[in-house]
Image (cartoon, rainbow, N blue to C red; front, side, top):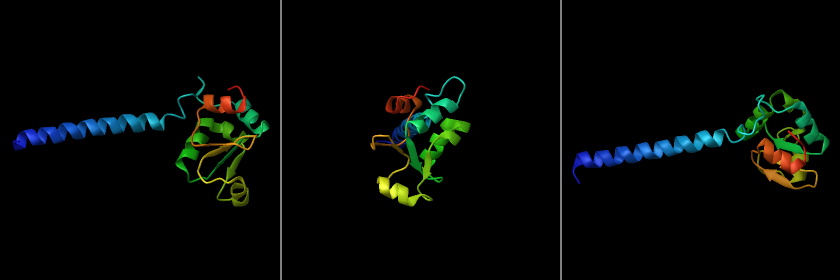
Length: 128
């Protein structure tokens, strides 16, 4: 293959791979934010309902996925029962928390990873 054709194939392949990566990471980063209500943040009532039903978010301050969950709740995060596993190690160890974030549900089951508002609503029975 002549050098010009080889260069064009490599350049085209690079562009396609970069575009696919950009598309994937852009959509992945917005997954948790995609389900926000029209006002742009979760209501205090929804966050209070999660806590009242016994839903706990286990994570750390340094965890980027935990930070996305925190950002999704906005100021309502103050009403989320958040266990910082760097500070509440006994609780997290006792619950068998190995990954962040982990949503601990009232029945003791665990949901690992970022969750949308719809997913949290289905898991908890709380209305956003």
